[in-house]
Length: 240
Image (cartoon, rainbow, N blue to C red; front, side, top):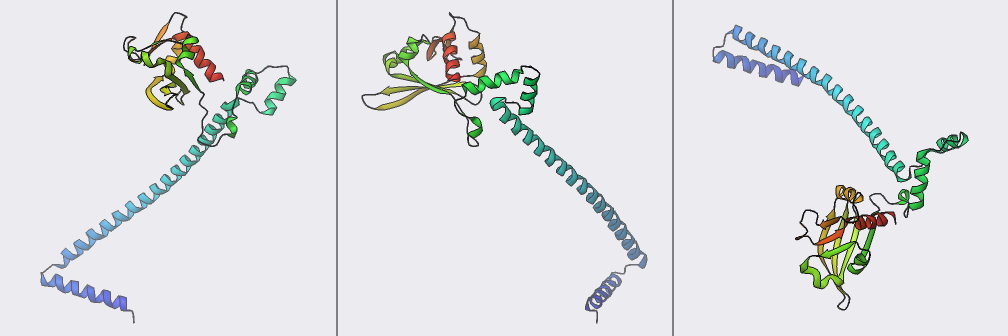
């Protein structure tokens, strides 16, 4: 026997008895059934539309992922190419066979001569940041630094300045007080020379001065430097 069908018939009979108990008219029941069928049909159409839209969304997502994959590949290839600007061998050989001197080949040669670390062999996530530490006396003898704030005059003989190029294109300067007798070091100041300031320094004249931090006046600044000498020093650090 079909137990499910028997159960459905029994449940339907109970519903009819309930409708009779509340004196529902046959036309009311038929009207309710018609409305239910209409609602079910509307919901069916809605599900079909959603199904069609879902397929479109999946197709758009697949296309986006593929476009993003290609963009990432091209970006990575561009970054690697920027390390040395070395053109493919076919470009180089064709240029040489026609006695053409490509600018990229010239620049690539200069980059390779100045490279200290091969960027292609560096582990992922690493970056090469030129760094140099100099004492106050060394900076003074190079005529880079003119003076320090009056608060630090008595300790200037024990000050060390570490210049480190940042990924943003600027230079961070860490000022450390080094007491060799007591074998102690204290970081007393962190300065930042932004990329726009570095570009301004390159246009500086011999008599120009710069206050660091750059947002302080000469009176309140931690130190005053000769702009051109500082620019030359940073350029030398970057090259070496």
